[in-house]
Image (cartoon, rainbow, N blue to C red):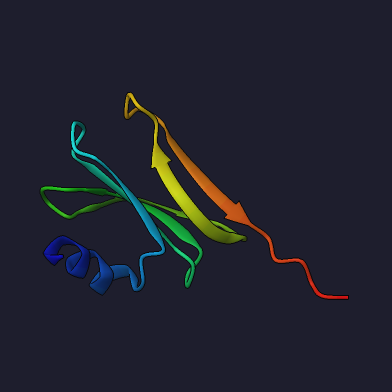
Length: 79
């Protein structure tokens, strides 16, 4: 709970996350600012910020931890 509170104070509500403990990485997505972010766990330092023009929906490391998949969606306007 403490780690989430620390990250939330920097980026607001975390919509989804994944952890790669082997590589000391934590990935988050935030629907409010439409970003994906990559963090170093032990220092809580933000390493990268990936802005998107679509709504962020999820984030997941592959099994080796050397790739990160992101999920986005665009809202369709109602007719």
